[in-house]
Length: 289
Image (cartoon, rainbow, N blue to C red; front, side):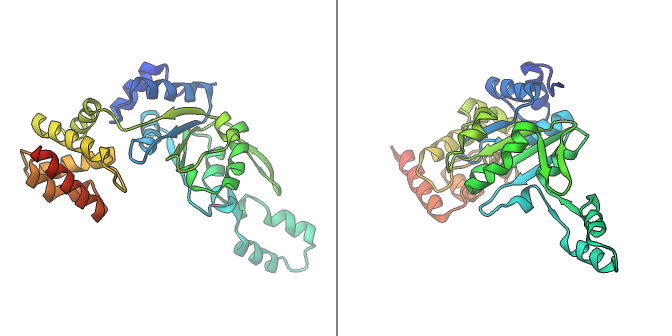
């Protein structure tokens, strides 16, 4: 068993070095996921750094990131593997008078196998971070495809047999909690809930990503973002959008995030017209109180 991090403090320091500021719970859980070789299920609202955590682990460890983006309608052929049917057909046509047994053994080999993210991660000998992103967007049936991988880090291909990982990947599953995942999947994972950071931590994140931002504007920005997240919006601002907003203010040389500056640049953090209108109205009302 090989640990990806020496201890939680090592995880925190190395993630920080990649630009990901992990709190104590995140650093500890990331360390345990590597030390225990168990998948890590990270749940929370969109934009809190779930996907970025997997990317940061890959950067911190020098591992290759293999990503399975989940969506409604995802099936085995897109998640695990499929056969190159066109190439197989050409091989059958070229086989001439060969018997089916010989042809069968020929066409069901690695040469004709198209690996998808799950199988790709299992077969790699090098350090690999497997990101199964937004798993809650898939159909319930897809979770069954994950159980063998998450339990034994292996994939069964009927024509070739069972492929078992020689080096287990660091697995991160993310979920926006749009539906409840099965208990079978949850049992196989460590669990981490990420939420929007408090103002102090978000200010630390923003200033670390945008070094030229003044203390005054950084404080104003995180205060406005916190107020926006309290509103009933279609899409609350993510941490990445807070950073984008900070970079926008630098580019426009804005030294005071007043009402006019907010109105001019709000499109960086709010992407729905109804959210924009509500935010302008609520922020204006708050300013007059």
